[in-house]
Length: 155
Image 1 (cartoon, rainbow, N blue to C red):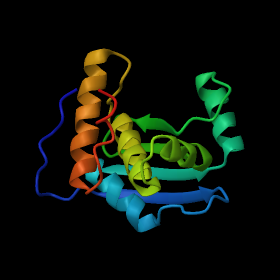
Image 2 (image 1 turned 30 degrees about the horizontal axis):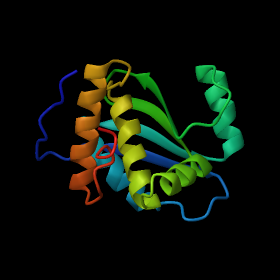
Image 3 (image 1 turned 60 degrees about the vertical axis):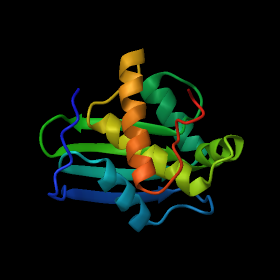
């Protein structure tokens, strides 16, 4: 998939934020919107839901057949314009990963929002070439947002 050049036109983003987790230190809706908008190459209608470990595990099991909570899940509902979909972030997993990877929680949330938005736009990381392309875009977007390159230690 080719990335559209970043034009000066602002992408329209209809973002709904749902918080279904009691985790502390969650990003603000303003931060979430900023990160999502940075990753958009086209207009989109997105629900971003922050969930508990229980809900994250249930969703991963139900939709991916994996019985554990994962950091981010993306559900694309249409490849029409505007894009439509849900992005689910599991707060306890995000917090644990940030600690283990010695990254700030805010930077890790920014990376995962960008990651989810790229998935929504059709990017994937199932094959090596796709993974390199997606990681390159993630790195570009996240560093432009002012955070460290999330893929720097993955090489």
